[in-house]
Image (tube, rainbow, N blue to C red; front, side, top):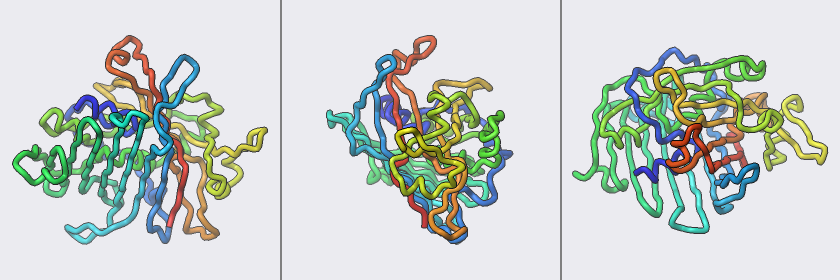
Length: 337
């Protein structure tokens, strides 16, 4: 399980957190209208190029193949319990290497309510050359299952954890929860201090420990691992996408390369008020994206890039920790309906 855990960290989804039981912070203020929502919202799809780099001093070289990708799709659906309208986030991730023994595939579906984004249901399936696993978590009934495959989830070999019903935030939609935080855009545009503390449920870690727990997280402004010039102006290889931003939030390099202004947000695991481990960096767009001529199509704080440093346990245990790998995830395609 440790090897799987390291792979999950490397895709910047904060998947291997040490659980510390605590209540969910319900004081986090979220946008009334979520950043991905529009008047006639049907769905939003964002697809990313994924490159796993090995760091060598100031240089880096790619380890992964070009067909590696991450895709998020968020849409509205109907809750089968009380017929309420909810959000659903589907996540697909694939990373492949010249050595197929390192290949990794993942799919997850997370359902959460529209107002406070509290979790309703989550399931996740991971397939890799060295190990597989599947879990599902039913927040309505307070029960979660873990198995080596989806077909085994309803057999006697599955692990079962019962947990208190309540309002929880699930790790599987972490970056959309951060994206919806009220005041995030204004605070970071003004270079002011911004921080929100909250708790998430990480089911991989819960089943690793054979008990239910939540993990304390912090999201807010921080020093980016990229230079100020780089993180404020992200290069996106999609001219059509850039055209839909107000020129106030784009810039042009001397060679004509178009860039989009972004906010840098650090998502950090906390332990007794102190940062634990390496921060995970997310870059969200400044300004509004307008997918067509209609005012109803505007969306905000689109996730442009994820940066995550990782390494093997020996390097991480050094003081200070040394991270010899970099996972870089950059927006390639985007569409709203």
